[in-house]
Image 1 (cartoon, one colour):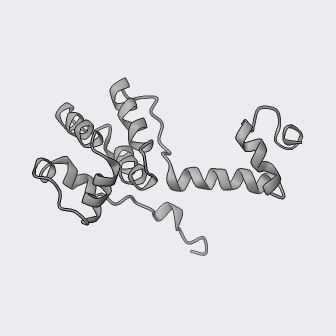
Image 2 (spheres, one colour):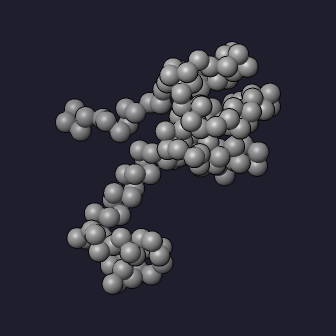
Image 3 (cartoon, one colour):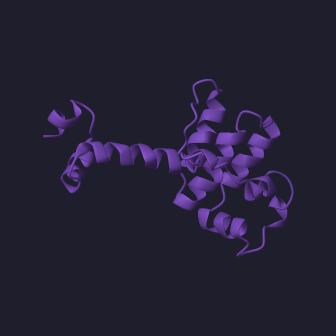
Length: 139
């Protein structure tokens, strides 16, 4: 059934199991696209060097989704402009436990001295631009 609706190869094994939950495949596909736009990277890594690609991937694939959004959104915006020293620092930050990182970002726990200055403060202060997602179509 999935192959007839969406064409061969459009759905993976897990997607085929979920397809009956949706009354039509169009809704399913549009929800998948919206999910990618709102919670995942929308930038291409084709033109950046392998180290930056690897870091970008790791920023979006953390242990908890909250840190995917914090680090991933920051990396999307800044990865191309970070210096080699800043990339080293970002990798040190990424080596920390996600539960600790999210508590530092939210202020639940004090940030350790090693991360108080520099890149961590930029990451914690970064706020993505959501205006394209909430533009008023009536204007």
